[in-house]
Length: 339
Image (cartoon, rainbow, N blue to C red; front, side):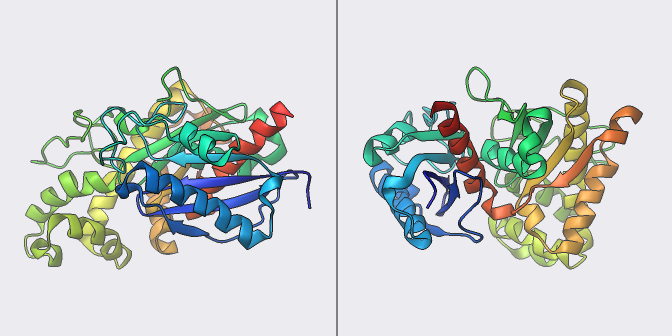
């Protein structure tokens, strides 16, 4: 048994996924380890669910609680760099009691172990970076875009996540992108839930499909099977249709890929990273579709000749485990700095 371990927790709207990382850098779980998150039942039950997740992964790995030096926690945003949920609540934290709630401190007080917080996009970005570069992580920089209900992401410089003064660095979803060559003739300017129009999330997210892309493309394919479905359900089915080669669904994901290429093109000019990572639900798809999507993103990313010779565009590894593993990496880094 190592001197110490850390636990990584990825908190989501449905489940908490956890993992355990040894001091030497070895993960003790190579699969999802989930328990219900209960976030829609309010803070008290959700905190109990987080402690249940800790107990669950420790039991799976035969690790005593006394060996846990820290816990890494990630949640969806918006939240501060210290884990205070937005005063207006958030997509997964809409129930009474969540607005302005300090989830990091509350978990730390309940479990009496230091808790290190990141948003979920930053956690996945951190894991992808450390997986790619290992002991050389501090010598490289990366940008990650995580496509889900919204569009999250993260910037890693010198092996550390860049959080920013208010904890909102890496919110790539709300960057406006050039629309020339992206919008189809007659297509309305997509709007984002944040109030902006033509930002990345208005294209590259499940919300963007539901609110903007699918309603437009259904006017081009009025007899499509999805035309008779409730729009929220239909939006969730688009990826499955795309995997089967459906032209309308491929057109939707083609627009998403172009938007992500535009985002990476912008990032190239102010960050010039070694690698651009793409993560989220779209890369959990069938391999042939995943490869096509990644190739389309690459084809729409404009890099200078010098950058193209050295930079990579790749998928976030261990897709649905990346958040928990990134949270564990952050906790391990914290322990090593404070030992």
